[in-house]
Image 1 (cartoon, rainbow, N blue to C red):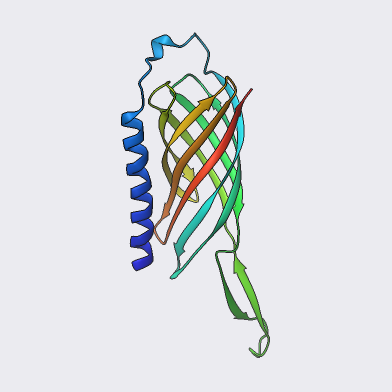
Image 2 (cartoon, rainbow, N blue to C red):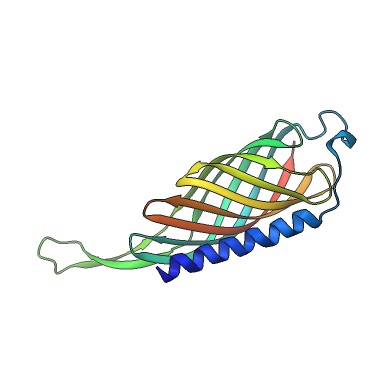
Length: 178
């Protein structure tokens, strides 16, 4: 229970920092953007720390993922993220009927999320939220910082929730528009 509370506090503090950054970001109206300037496909890669509590066990590990998405306009996109975590925790289990032979198994989680992304500004700092599904209900928030016409760095916190599982992942991603 302590671990779950710690995960929730970490995710909440990350979301608060990103929300404050988004509020303080210089606003650029969508009317200032050229028509279609944000429309199109994008891809990228992310790295972060994945922390999970499930079935009475908890652990954390480095995680990486590939990102592919499509922006319908400056505000809305759909995005898929696919990757894997390192070993979250290991445990021993009996592997023979007489319970004499034991083996060590290490738990690793896949990262699979599909969601709708809503950006709030089109300026130099673009706060966003994401809502979708993957390993349970997937929610997240972050800030995207574009540089150049094709590249952006995105920082955020993703949270996946099931009745017996809570996973949080602060991450940094590099995105490339096509």
